[in-house]
Amino acid sequence: MGRVVRVSKKNTIYIPKDIAENLGIGEEAYLELRVGGNKLVATPIPDPFWLALKGSKFAETTIEEIESISEEEQRRLGDKNTS
Image 1 (cartoon, rainbow, N blue to C red):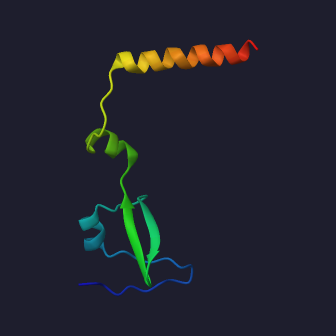
Image 2 (image 1 turned 120 degrees about the vertical axis):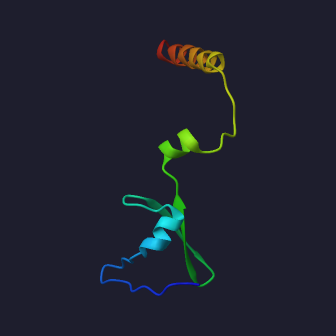
């Protein structure tokens, strides 16, 4: 069931504590706001540090791959600077 909240003079809204806690929304959190039909949809954006530490991983790489790419980029950029 939804909740009715009031929009303030500066177009701010108060998210009730139980809803914020349920969605993991805290102070300084970011939300994506969009319009879906005639509704306002607010989607929490997880903190990037939390995602890096605890979020699902979708790719794998090795130190060797990172080093190889770094060396390639350094060579490429070095070639540009000598032209």
